[in-house]
Length: 499
Image 1 (tube, one colour):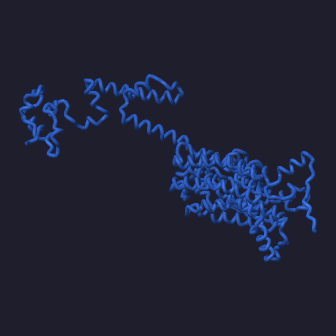
Image 2 (image 1 turned 45 degrees about the vertical axis):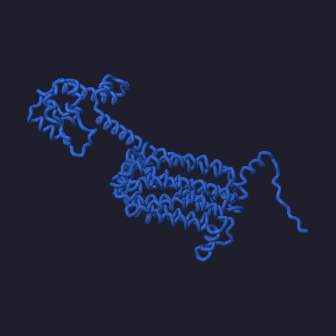
Image 3 (image 1 turned 90 degrees about the horizontal axis):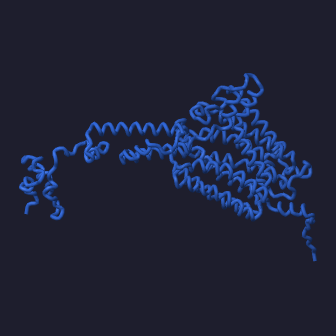
C-alpha cells in the first residue's frame, strides 16, 4: 500500500484555490516519508499550505509568527518594535537614575520581549550582579600611604615617613607581629609576664620589646625587597599600582639601603635581645620571602605554599623567645655547636609542640585567606604574569581552601591536647572555625561565585585574630590563677613525703 496522499484530497480541500495542481504534487511528494508508520500519517488538509505562510528565515527572527497570527501589518509591527525599544531605554535610564522599580516601560518590556531575549537579558543581569559582588577589594595600605605621601609637600617629614612606612606593608607587618606576640603569650609558663629581665629573661617586658621590634624590622626588610624586585609587575595591578617604587616616590637605591639596614638591625635585635635561634628564624624568613616566594610567583603555582611557610615562621619565633627559659645551652656566635644545640632544645622537643601547632594554624589559614583575596583580581594576576591558582584553576583553589579550613579543627584540638590551652578552647574555637568552614564550603560549592569569595575573605580576616585571642584568654591554668587572685585563695603545692 502506498503512503502517499492522493492528489484528489488536495483538490477537494477547502483551500484548494490557494495551491495549484503542480505545487500540490510537489507538496505531496515532500510530505512523504518512507519511515513513517500508518498511525502517524497526516491528514489530507494538513498538507495544504497557504501561499503567505511559506516558512523562511523570518520565522526564526524576533518571533515574526506573532505578527502574522495577530494579523498585524508590517508597518504596525515595526512601529511596535520601536516602541518597545524606546520603552527599554527609558527603563534603563530610570534604573540608573534611581527611580521607582515599577514603571510603564517595565510592563511593556515584560509583555513584548521575546522569550529568548528575556533569557539573554536575565543572564546578563546575573553576570553583572556577580561582577559587582566580586568587585576587587580596596587598595592595600601601601598604596593608600603612597597617595598620602604624594599629596604631601616635597622634602617634608610627612612625605618621607609615609613613603618608607608604605615600603613595610604596615597591615601585613602588624598581623605578623600580632601572631608572634600571641605565640609568645600562649606559651605555658608559671608567671604571665615578669617585669624583671633577670629573673625570667624570656618573659620580661624587655624581651618582648626586642621580639616585636626585631620582628617588625625583619618583616619590613622582606616586604621592601619584595617591592624592589617587581615594580614593573605591580604597575599592572589596580591594588599595587600606587606603591612607592611604582610611583617613583623613592629611588631603588634608597629602598635597597632601607631594606638592608632594617634587615640587619632586626636580626641583631633578635640575636642580642632574644636568642640566636629566633634571630636565625627571622633572617631565614627574609630570605624565603624575598628570594624564594617573590620569584616563584611568576614561575610556578607552588609559590602559595612557599608563602604559607613564610607566614608560619613568626609564631615559631615567638614560641622560641618564650621557651628560652628552658634552654640549658648558652649559645654564642663563637661556638656554632652551641647554636645548633639551642635550636634542638627550642624546636625539637615535646615542649615545642605548641609552637608547631600555632605555626600550622597560620600555615592553614593563609590558603582560604589568600585565595579569597586573589579571586577578585585573578585576571590582573594573570595579565601581570603571576602564576596563581585562582587564575588558572579556580575549582582547585576552592577545594584547597575548604581542605585547610577543615584542618583548623584538629589543629586547635591539638593545642588543648598538649595542654597549651584549656579544654574549653576546643569548644570556643570550633565556633569561629565553623564560620570560616561555612564560608569556605560556599566558596567551593558556588565555585567562587555569588559573592562567596568576598565572604570568605572577611571571615578569614576575623577568624585568625579571634582564634589567637581565645587561645591567650584560655591559656592553660590562666583562668585558675586569675580566680585565685580575685578570691585570695592560696596556691597549694603538692608535697611528697618520702617514707
